[in-house]
Image (cartoon, rainbow, N blue to C red; front, side, top):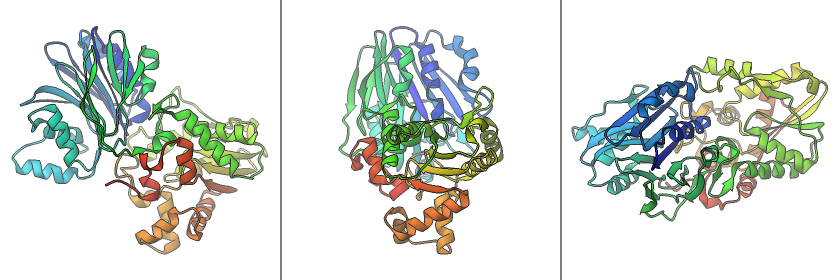
Length: 470
């Protein structure tokens, strides 16, 4: 996942872009960048985030941008952004939140036309540059955006900064969101409304799926109307979204409370208290606790002053070390305790298994894990979630392979994805044994959809049931 922020203002907006982009740090992992137009030229800066945080990387450069009234910023999973491009449309800067799974096909098509690419991401074609090249082939930005959405398979939301304003274009099927905010000096566009609160902006407009709006300091107007199909990523409410964010007018934290409450209503397990696996499991756990009338306590706490997020380091062994070192067990709460833990998901299961071992070492008597979404069985084709891992790195798929003795058909996978089947029950039991848990239960897809509060056909649930509109 990635996140972006853009601003067009009647007054210099550098600090707003700086802090607004930083408020998306929970969405990105490796790189960040900002670009500004100061009335005469485009200015750009990109930094690696694997060894430091966004603010400390960019703070010393702010004076270089200080008179700019138009700017964009991005926290990115992998590629270097923003891209600054000069072509038939003039000069523009681009940031994207995208996963283009036909990128090699598109790159070969463009290379065959004697076009070239200059920026790489981990020795591969930079997806944002590919989008910029596609846009530059058109006779207008509107036509360029339409061209991108006609060719890209996967997902792509973007901000295009020109000398006159910013085009905000939401993914064709709305898998990632864009919200516009306003204050007395102008407008901003962002992935999350969380970035507005402390900067003095009020949410003004949520873009529809496939919609594009052009933003100036005076207004924002529709350039491309929204489509009829929306499939926003349901995992935003489960894990990615910051608690204060709203997507499709549904608050993340409230959805997590409802989800936890739903899990509690279908659970008769006896325990001494409820806890959340920090951080995204906490909202689900509070909802469970309130519904079950069990105390909420914190036997796990994170030590964050000096330890970065566990997925920020480049190497997996270092990510695992960081995850272990920053999570502290409070043994005053764990001795001889029966605890129900809420977690957002189980991807590989490695960190959860390590945490469970720490709990038993700290004297916990019973560990019951309740997972806020169904088992992850299918690879995500639309966002960069778990994109660096093989599908067989998913714990559920490993267990399925063990139970079936190798690869399985789509029909068999559908059985494992159905919570009412015998195969599903065997998969969950095998996962419970591998994780050394007293009990393990996952949220069902219908209950998750109900907790979010949107119709099923408005949500992308591909990683759980292999459904999509492609």
